[in-house]
Length: 326
Image (cartoon, rainbow, N blue to C red; front, side, top):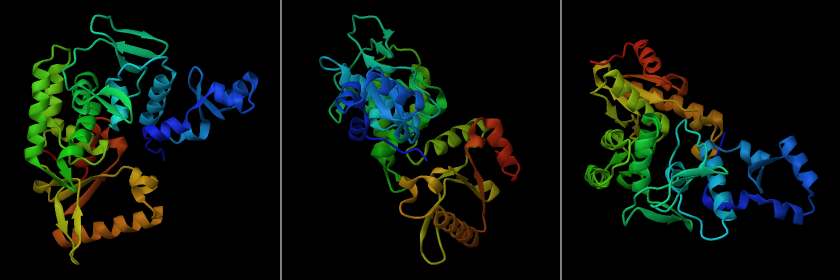
């Protein structure tokens, strides 16, 4: 399963052409390694081991591209923005593959693209820039606004949820006063902006909820809203027969059912399952489900990534279990 990547890890992973040649590789050796897949060319003059590349999500791959652009800069690299700032902040890019590395350029310059780098002329406020691991980029809040106005809604909501989760959620509970203050700050930012997509951005920020633990949960919530579900509960709490606390992704009170987005990550990702085997995780999920059903009398309906490709697919999955909007 692909793994997440931090800036320091990306810096250690990248291999410069000059460094490879210092270790004894010739131009022909490098070309042969690229041809065989042993090396992946991230950018001209920058490479990563093929096994490492195969083990990364799209966010990690783009982070490698961002770090390569920064390391190849002769002078101070310009601040990164949009999707490139998102991966620096650790935000998800749900079904979004950046076509270029995004940086800022002077307000008097025209936006342009060259050698895989897209340069954007964006008006910035005093608090719109920050650094992540020594790399300049747009701040987390400014990045959320930019993503909310430029990405497709599913990706925009997933990123906004992840950002809000970072500041407003402890465990499974969201501090609504913190969330409201966050939305207010972003609203003020958007009120000063004349960039395209602000109307969508306002909708995304208003809809954001940090209780989503995975992008798939964020997208599920968006699709449920489109389907007309308005009385669903987020992260409903259940106490087991022996006093343990369980939280479910969604609750459908009218249908007396819980809903769970069942991403593969919890079964196969080392980051999510820790030192447990896949069998251990499956058994634990089964016991948890038995407890929830036994204590509440409610059903549990699960869906996966294939069901959130469209609202029709998710609606059909739920309807098969008798779950429909009021």
